[in-house]
Image 1 (cartoon, rainbow, N blue to C red):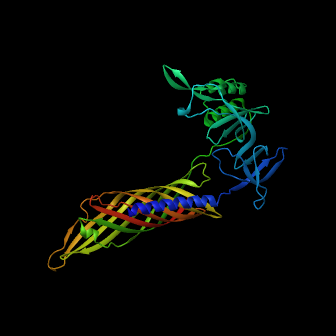
Image 2: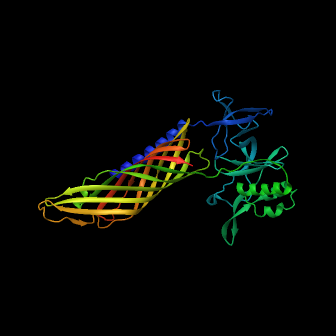
Image 3: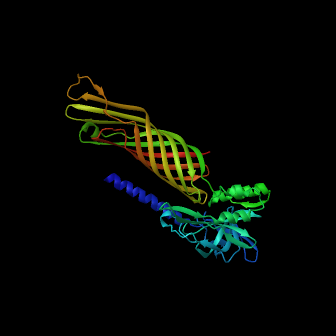
Length: 417
């Protein structure tokens, strides 16, 4: 019960700190520019949010210390920031549901008008734009003359052998056939094209390669990036054993173990998170050796338990930049396999000095697989990092009537390649 309460408290603290730091550093002004309705280019700084959905407005400053100006799609022609381009537009959207359990049998399109910033995906003699609205629905557009036209697609239910099947009104394929008709082989590619960003970008790239037309801009989708490195430090381990049936183990006061630890890490940085969220993975060599003593009326029990583990640690990491350094928080799980063990019990007679010592196993049944929970806080400066981490694991006991909790603190230095 106490352990569950402790873990819940740690999780709430972790989430609270992440939310606080995320709200504390909401502004993320990067160099960018806007083009006004009259065609003037104004350089400055745009509050960049690595948008999953197209922004409805942007915050702009000509100087970082200057006044913040809010622009909507009808107030500027376009803006550019962090290799992303957006244009302001009043466009047509199709409002039919896309989830299978919400579809109906009407194949007709249902259009509405919306005002938004369209993201430029491909720009050239033929251009492709994308709009993801607040409902997470994707719309794609092409530019014909001065008009921005929706590529039309709708899902609906169709009767087939007395059952409903999902069908699609793929009018967008006919639109693209006309739009890209100066490429004689485009029809073959259209047969394999679906209504997705990846598929449409592939089609447009084929068009430009085949016609040798010049592409002014192509947006590259952000992918998972990674960082490799090494780490080393100290661990401080405390063994906590509780048992109703083995008093000499439960009553022992075990020493703390101070040990060296080292390993390698792979940090997978998630896209669309402003490089704040990542999946942090480690291969770590961790060890400890603890000794304990207890006695009854006749016997002194001396216990030695030592384990060396090869651990695979997997954690969620939140990183918050603060000026020249970053603060990060980890939470995750550890999985360790024992590669070297010592399980020793010495019994010494208290009442008779002539009686020989007895040697045996401290634990009759042990396991080599250890699982635990991890929580850490640290700081990163350039390629160097420091972390304080806590681990609570289930230890080595494989007995139903004996609990072996292993609690460790790590003090780790890391270097990123």
